[in-house]
Amino acid sequence: MGGYNRLIVNKKKLIIKPLDGSFGRGIRIVTPEDGDADMMLKSYSGGFIAEEVIQQDEQMAQLHPESVNTLRIHTLQNNGIVEVFHPYIRIGRGKSVVDNAGGGGVFTSCNPETGEVLTVVDEYCHSFTKHPDNGFPLVGFRVPCWKEAFDFARQLALANQDVHYAGWDLALTKDGWVLVEGNPRAQMIFQISEGKGCKNELIEICNRLGIYDIGL
Image (cartoon, rainbow, N blue to C red; front, top):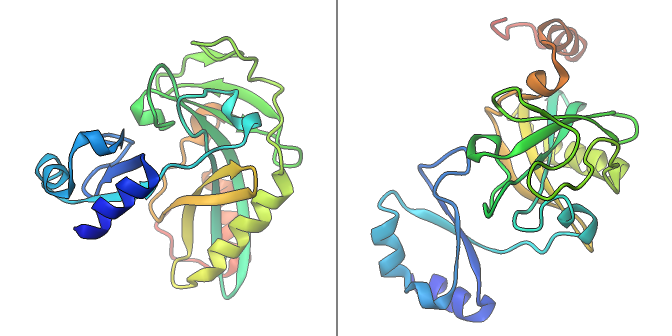
């Protein structure tokens, strides 16, 4: 684990994610004072991923400065053709460093053409127009570099064409969009923020792509 020790010394701050975790649980930011790799392994018996902390663009940071607020974009691809659907923002709350809804965050629906936030909810179907902690006006906010995010998601979808469905978590930095992670079993919680199901739409997309056995 010498690589971890060198990384933490060079970067001064890392974000740690347990390999066996989900919904943002167990994710935290560590510094050299938090111990070396052996100590981290004891804390994360199932192993962990250590990554450089992303410095998000100021426009996205104003939504909730404590967390990296990501854009989730879903893609379906088959035979090199990609469909992008139902993008939405995930926004942290309180002192949390994660934006996951399962970790207490809120999430939106967005106009797919403009990136404008239309609705904001949490997993308990509470609705908001402003951030419930800092009061930032969320409804009406427009996600910057919207078209570039869609283009990036399409590139990611084509990087491994054995993966036909994924939810991509993208963070906006001063240099553009970067990939946080790809989720091959991404939940479609945008159905909560949009207030409607997507089964029929999903079937139509799959039919256009020539994917017929999807178990719906």
